[in-house]
Structures are given as structure tokens and as C-alpha cells.
Length: 91
Image (cartoon, rainbow, N blue to C red):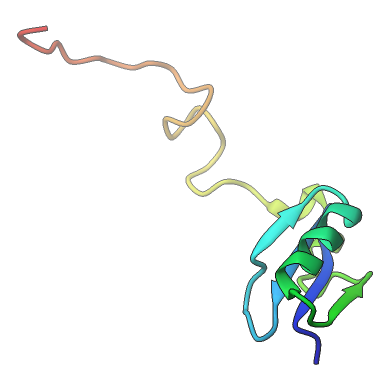
């Protein structure tokens, strides 16, 4: 089993240590991830995988769904009206 694994993580590249549940670091390019993995392995083995074990590459923008609480503007989220403000004494 390799000491360090490099794999796709959505549109980035992740570096994970052996036995770790989540990546230690993420990089924008494969080359940067491989260089960091070699430094972390310190002479140990490095495995580079082109697949994404998290499945993030299959996520589409429509998969996100709607934010909890309804459409924006009704729950005080972005785009909501200001509403009534309380005066703060002493400011």
C-alpha cells in the first residue's frame, strides 16, 4: 500500500496519507500535488490515481437543490429586504 496517494478531488487534486479518511492538502494542479506528495512521503511510495473516489466530479450545479428555508428574500438571506432595525442606545 502506498504511503501517500494523489487523486482527483472535484476540479482540484488531493494528497492523502495512508489510512487517512480525508485529504491532507489540495492543489489546483496535478503537478503541484505530486511534488507535495513526494515531499510528504520522504522516500516512501506515492500512488497517483486519475479517478475521484469522492464522486465530486459527477456533481452538477442542479444537484445542489434549494437552500433550506425557501427562496432568497423570504428568510432574511441574500436579497432580502432590510426590515425594521432596532435603535441601539449609546452608540
